[in-house]
Image 1 (cartoon, one colour):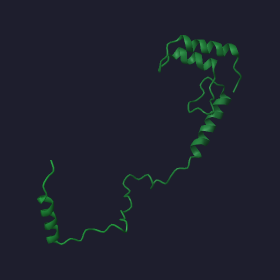
Image 2: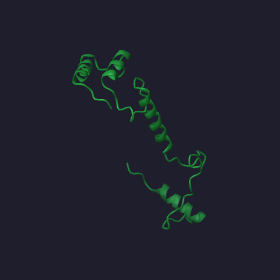
Image 3: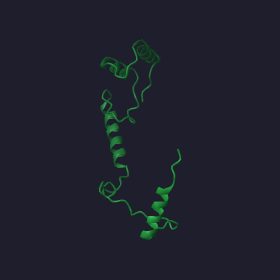
Length: 117
């Protein structure tokens, strides 16, 4: 990255401080800042438009390597219709083994309790 002179830094800082803060700066403002403060184009996801062709080639090659080096999972792992593994209950939990009569007694007992107000 080329060195920035103090005059350019001063102009850019003055420009930032004198213009109202906004999330969508004007095209003039973006161009002014990009010409005065060059960004680190190699780490950026956006192409270095105003840079020499050599920098553009380096940026494109680095972006290519970054995308190729990603470890992608199998296409099977991304399948939205894959079923989750079956649920395995813990050993301490057993399904209830009540007879029909026991269930009736339990329901009568529950319904027979007085409600607390």
